Amino acid sequence: MALVSFPFINALFYLGFLMALISWILIIIKKNYSIAYIMKIPLARELAILLLISTITLFYVSDLSYGVRYWSMILQAFLSYLMIYEVIDSKELIMKFKYILLIAVLLVASYGIYGYLVGMNKDRAISFFTNPNYLSVYLLIFIPISLGLAAEESLSKGKRFLSVIVFIVSSIALVMTLSRGAWLGTIVALVLFAILKDKRFLLLLLIVALIVPFIVPDNVINRFKSITSINSNMDRINLWSITIEIIKDNPLLGVGIGNFRNIYAEYTEGKPMIHSHNIFMQFTVELGIPGLLFIIYFIYLLCKIALTVLKSYDFNKEGGGLVLGTVMSLLALLIDLQFDFQIIDRPTAMLTLFLVASLVFLARDYYPFKQLSGNDENSN
Image (cartoon, rainbow, N blue to C red; front, side, top):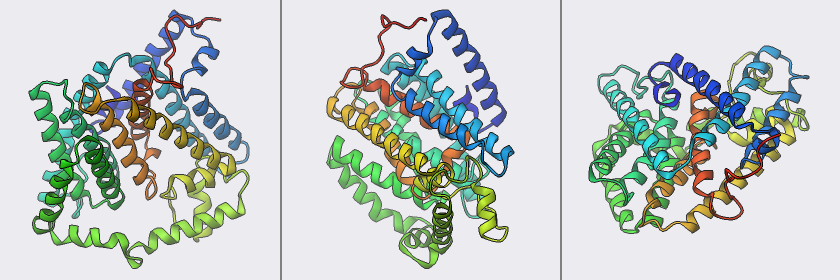
């Protein structure tokens, strides 16, 4: 419920999370899981280390209220991953849940297109979100997923047709967000998807690329051209320059979890900025060298798992489309995170961890990512 409802009614996300948390705690009690068992879950130790690093920074943050607020996001992300991992027990369940999400995505994307066409949101699609970048990362995640399900050989024609519709509508809505980082991430993911699945798709992508400039508004064309323009990106370049200055002044421990906003304002005479628009800078500026080492290692592990899965599945057989969609979705998000940091949003973070947990599950039968067996020791 949490992941399905959050674009429409944010309060339902927290209600859904609370209900899931209570259920998970009851499962832990019933199955008598020990902490040692939980820490054997793939990536659980790494996320626990992130939580520990974030907790330590609370002792020296300049604004404890913001620190606790953002620390609670790390805690929620950690718990979300454990809960999702506990629930996933088959590829069929992953696909079923993704299809439920696709219905929500179709509504979100359709409303975003409507809002853009009638001029509701100042020339950028926003849909039910408060910011076009939140919409763009939401669509970016589901465009490769919908394409993967459309290419999934084991699904019925009806489900594959729905996936095609979601792919088309979401792609149109993404263009209307004018979010350049999301565009880049999606383009790279789709090209790589085509190369791995069927190189004939590259011809289709090329045809679409040749047609699009003749049918989209001029502001979309100008926005795309600005990707390589230094002048158009000066605000982002200045932001990164100041972030690097802050890192140089606080290299070892960082400024503390959630305190980038306040420290940045001190360097810019009061100009606020929530985050640094780059995942590596954000982890480094707030958590110092330990944060940088963590995110590098965590992404390395994700890449290792992704490569393991890609090498182990036949993309033209059952599960191939599911695997490609999941991996390409995470790749698109990683590229976007070089220019933005929307995983600072709690629902987006949870959605990302659903993809991570799905990827880990898909790798469960392949060394060294064996899933824990129900016969493993799990009691105190």
